[in-house]
Amino acid sequence: MGEHTEVKSENARSVILSYKDTVYYVNQVNVKLQDGADKIKATFHGRRCADNQPRDLEVEISHSAYDVLLEYAKLDKLDLVLVLQIECSEAKWCLMDENWLKKQVYSVNTPSYIV
Image (tube, rainbow, N blue to C red; front, side):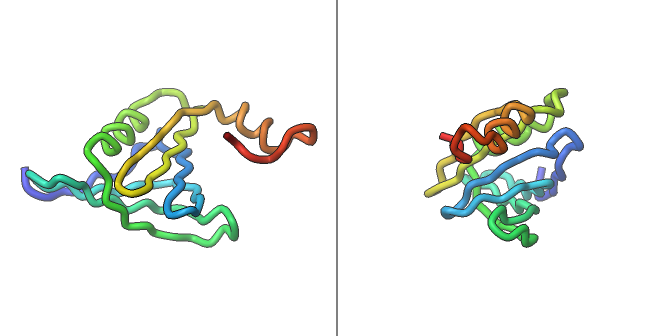
């Protein structure tokens, strides 16, 4: 198989990444695969939420995190947001409805955070 790069699907347009205590809106992920490697090198292209500055984050991810990204890109539901947290080489994730998420964040009666 050798080395090659896979670029995001058009369906993978809504990824929120938490990495090193910072949150990013990601619009593209490039992944470099190598035969026999334990970790996969991924570059997350997006913007830091705090100041909207563009960032390219080079992160080593596990094969299971790669599988989550791949399956998310295959989904035919453009209103689903992938929330991905990568800390200490472990990844946690969930899928959220974009409309529900916007209502929670912009609601006056509820705190503007997500648990």
